[in-house]
Image (cartoon, rainbow, N blue to C red; front, top):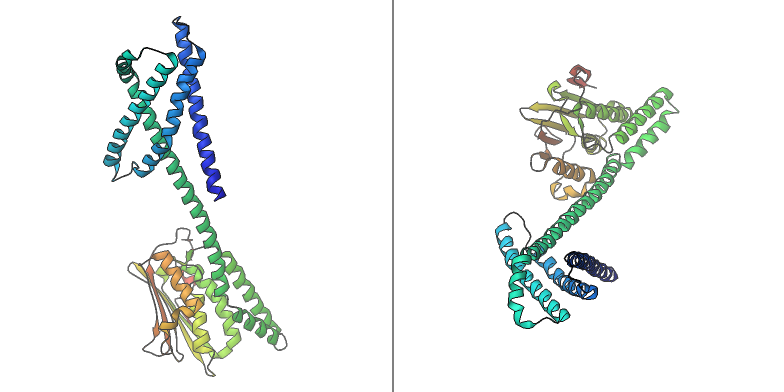
Length: 379
């Protein structure tokens, strides 16, 4: 409440100050003009007339502000708003002239029987000036409103950027799930007593994975080639953990390697497949990774040969943080121009499929050969 009252106070003070300066400047101009023509005017009478007249405009200014906001000159409303402002401007201008004439006659003690003739003279010589003053107030109000909206949008964009940055950090936290890090560190600890080279290699892969994740933390999209390189770091760690229990096959279309895809989009899907399709088993499990370009789209598919999705999984989809986060990111980046399905595969196990529009990544290195990432690979 105090903030609103202070704002109203400053606004009223600004209006009074403006019209006071306006009235004094016109009073000085009128006084000097009369001196030039050797009419010897009274300074206090001249100032009184113009200050009282400007005070009248000061009282009329808040209603003009209201009319300007109520009838903005915007697309679809211009004709109606112009008509309203022309009518209101005419009324305000006539009222301003009446105030001026009344004060002038009162201060100068002029004969009142010539009032109509004086009003005619004022109307012919000053009406357009008063109307222009009204329109200037309307224009300034519109300029202030547009600036305020611009500042609000700028502030909203700044807040959105902050929220996006925080969301990206949350994405990183969710994708590198604590249990994955704990399991990896536990495996490294065990290997230190059995196979130091394997432990050192796994620690190096974990370092590369974290470095790549932090590098892409504030990047919305990357080329598929880079996304697969990140995924390979993750899979090397998991294959060290599960040894012969995890088999991974890849089917990568070279034509899709330069496609722009959401950063860190595949890792949570592969992690989900390993966690639910491979980890609970004692025998060997298989994860298939497919990426291909189909006309104007890119298909990304992750399939495991585990027990598949439990009944009622779809209704609890939002409870799975990584998967619900993946769906939200796709919706934010592509709107309705994408598809994300998670279902049981006819061949057994679960399959996650993403279709997004094909867009060549603008910063992709055209000189790299597609063969750097194998078209198919098993191991």
